[in-house]
Length: 152
Image (cartoon, rainbow, N blue to C red; front, side):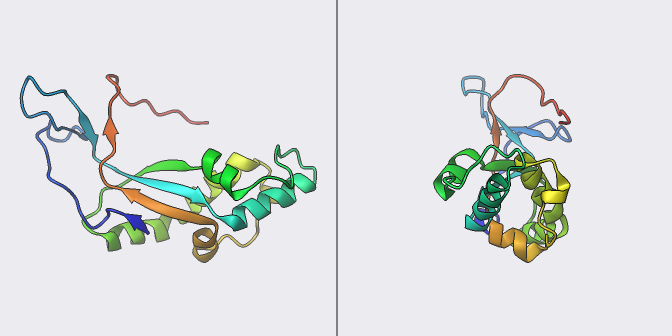
């Protein structure tokens, strides 16, 4: 896994227990909030593109065709997932091993909600073959509004 999972960075002042930290040191500094989460960026690899091409060729209503490329997949199908903060890279890897199926299913659902078309073999090894993972340890919220969760 790429990224900065092994480093946590300096903690800034913030409201204890709020889930947000302010990096602003004084009133003249801009107020920037760091989320108490890591950001796991999931990027497609060729096996996902091959599966998408097969779906398009089968006429199952998928908007992709045989000309769909890895470059297009990487440009339009990268997804960021907020994941728990961890003390070291091993903790993050363990979290991914325990929860890869949630991410895998979300990525497949983004292509087709017909679960009958999903690959039957959805193991951690298949997941890692289909996606590249990058971990960012300092997602920053620049929006001056509370985070709102929605369920699709």
